[in-house]
Length: 278
Image 1 (cartoon, rainbow, N blue to C red):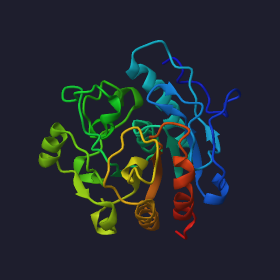
Image 2: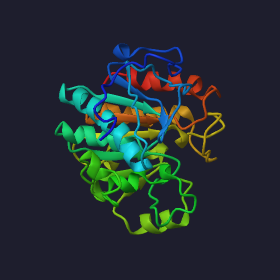
Image 3: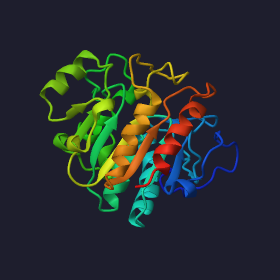
Image 4: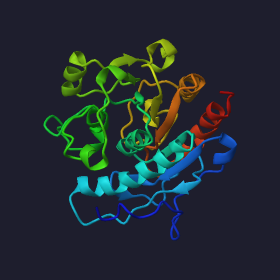
């Protein structure tokens, strides 16, 4: 697969923007930056936590699924390396589809993780139901095994059973998503009331799309959904999850347009959550 054999490395040219903040070593996790929104490279994406390494791929001139597979193959390799060494990789990126590479990486390391997905949106659309065609609305559905030929098979990604998924904070759902979730085994919760009793057994992959927070607190979101929790509540849920001792990896979707100070606003809350004793 073109691009998939490239090493994970610091980008030697134009670098993604970082806000000042704790380093990966202080936070006690390996922070992997993926400055992309789907297959669009975002050199100015401002991360709320400083990555210790950057994943960047020379993407092939091919269809979008092959391009994403090349990029997420590198993500999977970095995650598998960190998890295989007993670490808890933290992947920060510009979208939610990067989660496909993160979960694939955990599986390569022998970690069969359930999923806790915090997001203002359902992310359970399909190509057959989406009205917009936006691929960023599909990742959770793809993780359940929808049309594996698109990307899961290319990554070696095995489906996560619906019963091992919890969707948290989703409030902006399209009608097909409402219909699907009504019949699915995916559990639902709100950020403020999420507890350990809501979680699947075993190790966990925690996905945090920061648009789960109220857009009044995070300017510049690509798809703002009013009525969400404040950043303190979001950080509290993350702290609770980390406190279970079962989190194998975390993915943070920085789903905002660069340059709106969202990263600086959320950074202290995230740092506090990761710095709490676990």
